[in-house]
Length: 277
Image 1 (cartoon, one colour):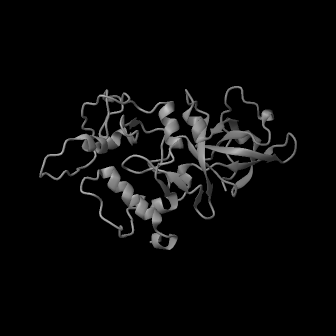
Image 2: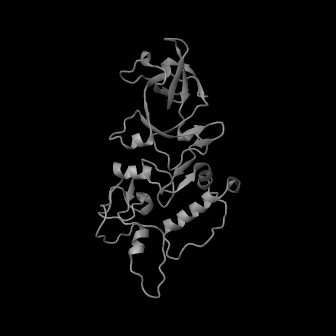
Image 3: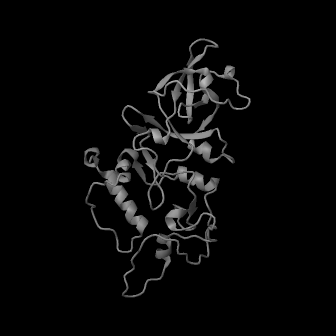
């Protein structure tokens, strides 16, 4: 329970009498932090108390904030609500879907997004299975700049491939595509190292760039993107991963991302009991 909130400064132009059931509002907390909630009902018409259902921040959920959580990300839930003073409400907010949030030309102070529900009583996320991207295989974070390979269309965090987001090269080809197109020398086995941003001249493809709206649409609609359970993923971020056997070794010419994805698929094939610590 959040408890009754301290009265804070109202947003300019905000009138508490405009509140209605279903309104999304910001509330000043006793710790002077801002909380986001949905108005469920009023004690009485024009009364001093309003029932609020809280959105959870990443800091509020099990395992806390992770690298894939956006700075304006919230989780919807239906298990925690309480009565608060109408005067604790400081203004209206907008909670968008991830797709709507990605399409915003300008993110205002009162703009947030939600892509999952959260069950505080069990610590479950709904949906639990989400797409993951890049060599780090983490869910999409709209705040982290990404670059798209001109050949395969895979997307990578700039920091994961050693590219400064303000110094995107004119052409970008990922390690996997660069190695596939490199001529092999007779008698020399081709191997891969860590993924990096070494580039080779390209005659075709798109100019490298941080993701545009078109690139973001590909991210959210790509049916081939690997998916992972966040419940299982929590073990990774806590430096725990159960040992398992793959059905075969990866090819000697496999790139880092190909090996990573093969491991991810093997992990996803494990049953729920096998994933338990």
